[in-house]
Length: 210
Image (cartoon, rainbow, N blue to C red; front, side, top):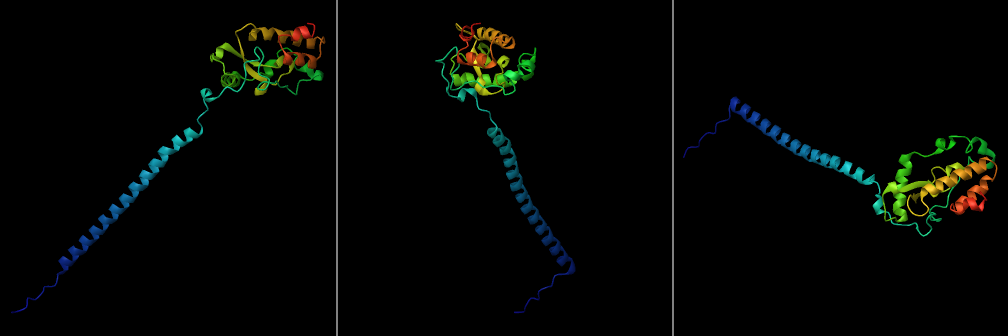
């Protein structure tokens, strides 16, 4: 039998084969890059979606409903002394009453904003375990009043005093005014007025003979 001579590929065929190999290589490379890009994009998208949720969970405020009652109502119409013992403003002393509490309008310069006292009121209503949780039924009261140099923002000097009952918050307001007038009129000392109202505001005036 005779052997069949193998033809060598011509220049045109070799060129076509080379172009085909190059195209296949390019297609494969594109596919790999696309897959990698898709995976990366998916991971980034997942991370971006998770970030706001994580941040929101981190900064989520504590609801007042989750607070447990830790202050007693047994002392009403006075606050629980373990929760609200009272606190003083160090700027107000017997020596400074002439330029602080005895100046008309002075308390307005130290009174905390409603945004602060309302938020604290809601928190403390839960801590006192009141069954009535309507903030409008309570005055966020300065136990030692600003008129006698009570601390303006200290939570130990603020509590949700009921506006209802035999001795509502409105009754204490008139006692505070009379005590301040007595101090500024030099009928009683600042310390005596503070001590009387911090002990029991319902008997403070009679204790001082006012």
